[in-house]
Image: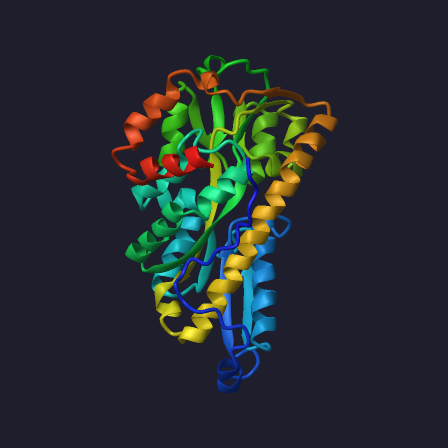
Length: 330
């Protein structure tokens, strides 16, 4: 597979680095931006938005002052979406999962086995189809800047799993959104939404038998202590999207909009690079704990579930076909 640079702009506006008229028009800290994220400060999503604020301030000689609110301090993602729509919150770096509850076509990005790893996912998320999908956020009164990545999804469990048939009748923690619920329901698994901070205890006391998870969280939350079995499935990618309130976006002039867009794009590219670098390391770290790791990346692991999921979602998420065509050419 060829590697390529993921740096792309997602708005047809000129890139103006100096923006001298911005600095002349306003003083330091005169433009304040508040960004809400659901992840803790140690998570790469939060770090990317912190970097965005620092970079934007530097590029504008301190005119922009950005405050990032991690760990859902401003509410859950549904609440933050409402705040962004009203203009009460300027920006969000939020899961596409939450948006798929409002825009069916966002489910396209969760098509099982659409991509096989984070590098392929990064290419798809910066490709023409995903870039065009950003326009759909306008229906919610938002400006979509670009998609990022939160790694690939895998399965961790208290007991060993050889095939998806072993999952029948089990309870698995998932992020509660329709495409993923359907995926687990088709495997006769009870999808159980549990907040991430409570997942360790839920695994410990048997409230759930396993979880749909990425390697970063499996490592950083020490889930290997209570779920010592890992199936590397890469069954879905888990994208994130940077959005801004349309009301806030419309207040900026062309130069300001250009700098904001460029800076977001730079940090999304940084984020892609982190997952490309650290995903193999997290897998190695997890193996070092004594965790039993089984490679289950072949589509046959899920049996008929992939086709059954497609029958449900392809009519509702029209971008699936175009994304599959792009993925095939990677």
